[in-house]
Length: 236
Ligand SMILES: CC(C)(COP(=O)(O)OP(=O)(O)OC[C@H]1O[C@@H](n2cnc3c(N)ncnc32)[C@H](O)[C@@H]1OP(=O)(O)O)[C@@H](O)C(=O)NCCC(=O)NCCS
Image (cartoon, rainbow, N blue to C red):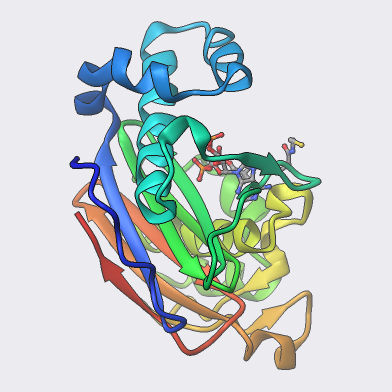
């Protein structure tokens, strides 16, 4: 990726960047040089080299992209963490408020950047569903809708729903300190949507918008924000 300055998203846009962490692994030394001491210590705790390289490729690209929005060098990008671990930019640019969220699954990575409202993103590698997992993810109503689906649709709907819920929880910054059923969806609606309930509240649900992402034929994905007037701009 070049290091030219990037135009910030407008207040109605979420910029989405996607990249392959294994391909970026070739830039290991360049990315490593961009990381903070804390990030390098974290990288060195991974047991498997492949996971270590992917983490460095994820954080390296994150810092490189943020630096291009902020007009700083990648190492100057100051990251801090919310109470449940959500990273945010400590040093804000003049004239706009950068919010971002990163996700990775196997070698797929995606970054959402917004201006002035919190955003969450999730990508999920589509894989076999463990028999018991839908019960842990879905509300009673969602479980009933899921059970009524034809077998051949279940895997796709499960990972689309999972990505929606995780993107919402990441927009809030809580992650799974809240249960996945905190955000409840109508499973018959595919693609862009709004939750049916948030924490049991229908009124709160109307404040949210979730857009579907299709990172690849083997991945499901979603971007979420507690804001309704925005759409995705695919970058790269
Ligand atoms: C947030 C969470 C759902 C992410 O799960 P995951 O399987 O790693 O999913 P993703 O790949 O989509 O997201 C990972 C990225 O989300 C970001 N992230 C971490 N915590 C986050 C949070 N609370 N909210 C939003 N984003 C978060 C990070 O950038 C992270 O990637 P990085 O560490 O490589 O930079 C999960 O970590 C969680 O539930 N965390 C909250 C509770 C917790 O464990 N807290 C301990 C730290 S205080």
